[in-house]
Length: 309
Image 1: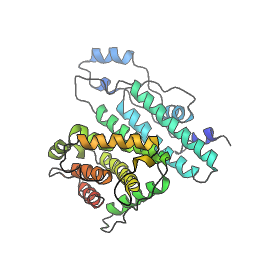
Image 2 (image 1 turned 90 degrees about the vertical axis):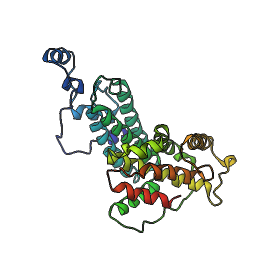
Image 3 (image 1 turned 30 degrees about the horizontal axis):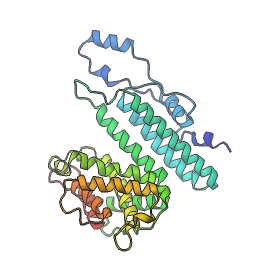
Image 4 (image 1 turned 60 degrees about the horizontal axis):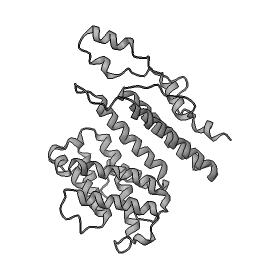
């Protein structure tokens, strides 16, 4: 079986294709002359089918594109594709399953390289939507990497918990911590980003402005990563809430050191007396707790994280 070919199958309706957008710079020109000059030097974007095939097959290059919408559209498709591959891999022999997962990870890294080479995040003289779209795309990239690298049972538990919360169920089953091998450390290294973000920007600042509420999907995706991280830390702490550093794999130890530094640098009081799992849960619970929050679901997520502390 050619796993590379299998993994590059596009899980979309036949003949589905759209023309990817041009850079947002074309829509913010001051006059027609400037637009004409810019348009004449801008290559026509690839179609969705070509760009997505090149990402998943790893056999072609992705034309440089400075449109945040383009990268978000491709990332959404890659997210759906990776979930399908993850489900299919569960029914394959271990060697083929691992090869399929690694191919999906390579596709995601290919997307990230193309994103880094684009000019989306460069300084601009005008406000643009591309930066917001790019942020959503990066958060979805992180979430997809977590789902590919994490323990499938843990991912499913979190998804079921979020579904129960969204349906208004008050009694959501607790996620029982179970120790997982160090192989999930790469997934947790991506999840740490969701702790790093609030700490770097300031939890109290996010509370006061509620700017983290602008995009509801970003918060929901981050919630998935945080709960997985808290559950993993709890498994290392059980049963006495203390982590035995001597028993850790070097990858786990390095990751825990990063988390400890972040917790120390946070602007929240009384975290030092908490185990790492509870500290991470509190950081996000406080970030979600704001009088100015836009989406009611944030109250539900805040209440659930409070239970994990």
